[in-house]
Image 1 (cartoon, rainbow, N blue to C red):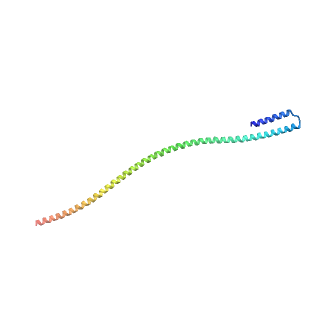
Image 2: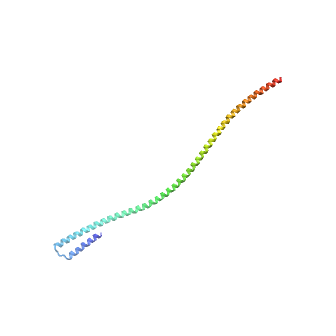
Image 3: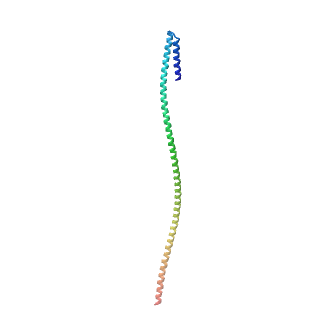
Length: 167
């Protein structure tokens, strides 16, 4: 932009010097026409550059707006990330507590299983003793019946002997 201004100024000064020292000769007119054409090209180039500057400025403004939006979005995402990290930490604490609770329950279940197995073993031993005692009881009951039968036979024999003696 500054270069364009300098070139325009130089062309303008050249016109001024040319007009001041010129006579109406054809050479000077040709030079004047050449300078006018150069001035028009420079002004046209300047106008084109102004348009490009406007386009670049609009693009820059759009990009700055996008940067601002992305910065705002980044801030929101950082807040969400912190919230998620806090939530993750709370959930991890809950998982740790639940794991501890599960382990304690597992130990209790193991202890109860051992107690049950021990009780079952004792119950099995008691059943074996009951079965043995029942067998002994049946044997002894049979002996008692046999003895009662023998007693009856002896009493019958004694009664027969007493009857024979009384006769």
